[in-house]
Length: 183
Image (cartoon, rainbow, N blue to C red):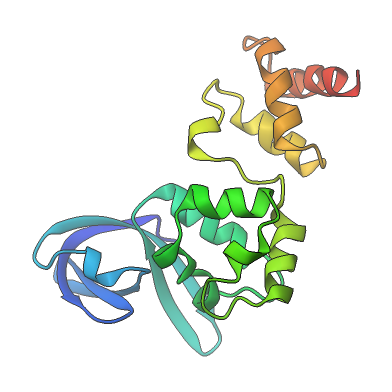
């Protein structure tokens, strides 16, 4: 539906901004509304949240924030209103580190995140998130995604990526990676 909206910031309130694009003002819920200077052009990555009684837009400065947000709201008990404030107090790498290190204390510092929700986030996402600096840039993104969906850990997958032949078709790369992972 929407990937991003580029426009002029016309209004900032305590939990949203209004971004004008082609004469339309989009109300976008963001983690830090006052970090968006008024009357400046901004590109905001968008997640449309649609329910039978609600249509809201959630916005992010980077694609990495949006992707982490999508992973967080996939966790049972975590909705957009609980996940968005996490970006006001924490960074993408900080949140991912906390999940991978099972740092419940870090996760419970966020509003409305109790110990039970923190444990569920860790249970569902540990080992499944890739930090920006360690994201594969070798053209094997689809291979990584396929192997993760089969239950392999990101750290194990990254060890076999350098051994894969980039000239092979994706299906053959996955088969080759599986052979290396089973060794």
